[in-house]
Image (cartoon, rainbow, N blue to C red; front, side, top):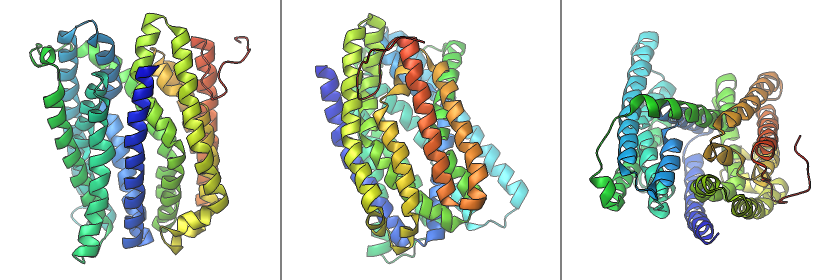
Amino acid sequence: MQRLGRGIGYTLLLNALSTALVFLASVVFARLLNVSDYGVYAYVVAVVNLLTVVVLVGFDRLVTREVAARRDSGEWHVVGSLLTHANLTVLALSGVTLLVLTTGGIAIAGMNLSQATLALWIGLLALPFAALGRIRQAALIGLQQLPAGLVPETVVRPALLLAGPLVLGVLLGVSLTAVVAVGIFALASVAAFAVGSLLYLYLRPPELRHAGAGFAGGRWLRTSAELGLVAAAGMLVSQVDLLLLGTLASAETTGQYAVAWRAAALIAFGLTAVNTPIGPLAARLWAAGDRESLQRAITSSARVATLIALPVAAVFIVFGEGVLAVFGPAYQAAYWVLAILSIGQLVNAAMGPVGMLLIMTGHHRTAVKGMAVGIAVTALTSLALIPGFGAEGAAVAAALGTVTWNVLLARSVFVTLGLHTTALGPVRLQKV
């Protein structure tokens, strides 16, 4: 519990800083870009984030789990084998993805590129750096170097995302477009990767430096592929609404929705903070059979996440128009989107670290099934509501999908592990 408390403290501090930087960067981008350009920027970032999860094929989750589990037993040769294969596989998949999408785009559109297509291609340049950076982060977290693992993605990248438009748009007077904004995003990803790599090289233990770089490819790829399905499902379940809206609606509508979506994500800030330390801790406690300590850690984490989420959700629901006005008058039309998404994110926080628990205890297939249902609910409801209700329809679909998969996974944790994930803690229930 002391280790968990320190981990939550570190992640809360770093995520608070990251949240502030990301929020300020979003405000600056929204004010310096027109609504349509901001919609293109948000859509490209969502696509790149999704592709990052795809090319990772679950190796980030696997690295955290295996490094945390094998660190105490001194199996450094196994850790070295895993990291070697993870880096090579992710690099190869990133290269193939870039090649296929670039050549495919040229074959379809020729050299007559729209601004949206050019922005997407520039964004794709960040793909290998973002993916390999996640491997570095996972390794450092598994080695219990939590602050160092989080700093590149939670501080360096958002700080550059904030500094970029301020320097170009405000100080130098450059007219910001979607292409320029995505270029800033790509450069920030490269810088975060560089910082993460330096931290990893400096902080990795001597045993790992001298461990043999084995290559148990088939063994690791099978396990990581299963975890990759979980990661892809998690990304889709959180962004399928934005991706479908960007495909079915105008760039202006997508831009307004993206601002509300970004604001609503702040509600789950506490859950994101507790998920990072609870993952490796859950893997160790479950392997040791210490369910009592694990239950206490889960309940404490869920309560921290809920206590943070409640006031933020209340502010967004009651004063949503004022919050959106910070981004610019054009975004106030997304008030109902923000209110609806806030309800879904509040439920998400209150249900606790359901997905992380299933993953770290080896029940990732169960997590995939529950998330797949949530994706299906969100996608089908979006297709039904977006044509008639636009952004509000996408918000209803997203909230409904979020509630669905959280309830299903919480029930699965109780039935499979005998653990209670919500902020209420253990209650007297019988397994079904």
